[in-house]
Structures are given as C-alpha cells and as structure tokens.
Amino acid sequence: MDNKTEIATLLKVLSDPSRSEIIDLLSCGKLCACDLLEHFQFSQPTLSHHMKSLVDNELVIVKKDGNKRMYQLNHAFLDYINQNLDIINTSDQRCACKNMKLGEC
Image (cartoon, rainbow, N blue to C red; front, side, top):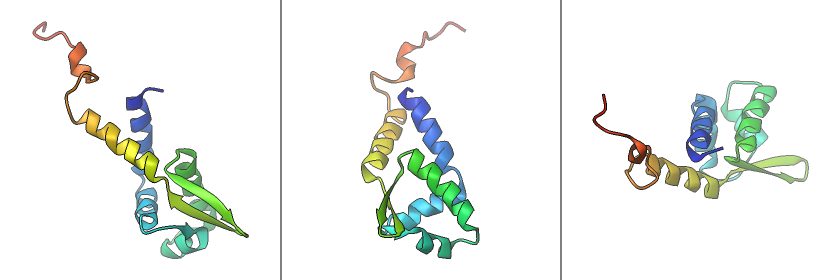
C-alpha cells in the first residue's frame, strides 16, 4: 500500500468522532477500557469495536496489565502520519504534480 492510500485509510478511521475523541483522551496518557467507557454513552461492545479499529490501524497500542487492557497512543506512528500529511501539503520531488503534463487541455 502506498503512502497516500495508507493516509486515506487512517483518515477514514480518525473521521469517526468517537475514535477521534478516544485519541484525544489518550493524549493525556494510558487509560484502561473502563476509564474510556465512563466517558462515553455507549456500550462496552461499541467501545471494543472502536478500540479494535484503532489498534488494528496501529494508532493505539494495547498492553495487558493484570486483568485490564491498558491503551496508549502510538506516538511514533502518529508522527509518521503527520510527516506524510506534511508531504501532501508541500511540493517536493515525490509530489504528484511533478508527473503532470501541463498545458495539454
């Protein structure tokens, strides 16, 4: 998968308001599922669905701590996303415009 396809997929994951809010909550540090669930008005299965999407797309890391699952942001991967968004926002050698033939319309 190329960078633009990967970024588009990740932006779709983040476009869900609940998942974006989960990311925002995790920006303060590690949280368990029970802490996250207290913040939202949805069921545990719904939270599990959102967390699976975030974990499967490497935005969030999950670690077991006894019988709890602790969630934290994957800061390295979020930095990677930011770098790729910066590439889209600037013109450099990798820019799609470098392959365009201008003035042929």
